[in-house]
Length: 206
Image 1 (cartoon, rainbow, N blue to C red):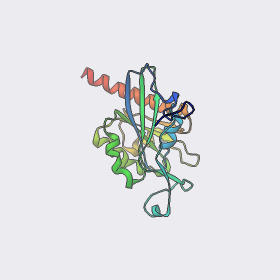
Image 2 (image 1 turned 90 degrees about the vertical axis):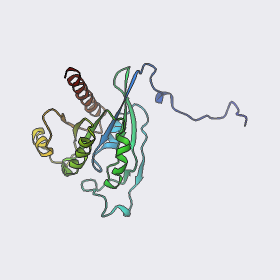
Image 3 (image 1 turned 30 degrees about the vertical axis):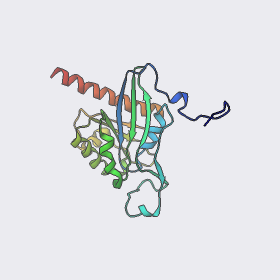
Image 4 (image 1 turned 180 degrees about the vertical axis):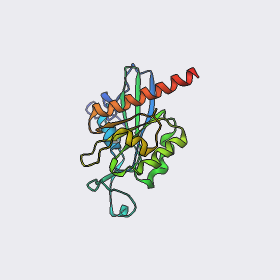
């Protein structure tokens, strides 16, 4: 087949190409229950057009999916979200957002493979959902930080009260964030990278 000069060839946009200065790439997973803001966080912070696998919610999920606090949500992630952010000219983070509905949690094992760390997004209206999420990360030995997404109608608690409720040790960072804001989401990722660096330094000196 002969292509004419006027034919359009589709492919990655120029801004989607990996920076030539990149020397290292790190896989990070963003996990949490249904509707806590994982897709929003990936979309707000990604420097490339994010890949999403959202599907329209139907009556089939009634009685199966817990959407308390997310009654207005009309779509849900069924596989993963994917984005990318350059932390420095040399370091790039690949972001993988997991599906939140429990019936899709079997996909998590594959997404966790090769992950250096994780962000656990929580919604204080449904704090109990986070217990299983954190438990899965602890079982697999994936280091994580906790980010409390700031929903307008969500109750607000002191960080130390949340730490106690989640039964987390002092060394695990917990912070508040607004997943809609790029700067806030980036701060969460920077906190995770500093936490991972401290773990690596401690291991090296042991």
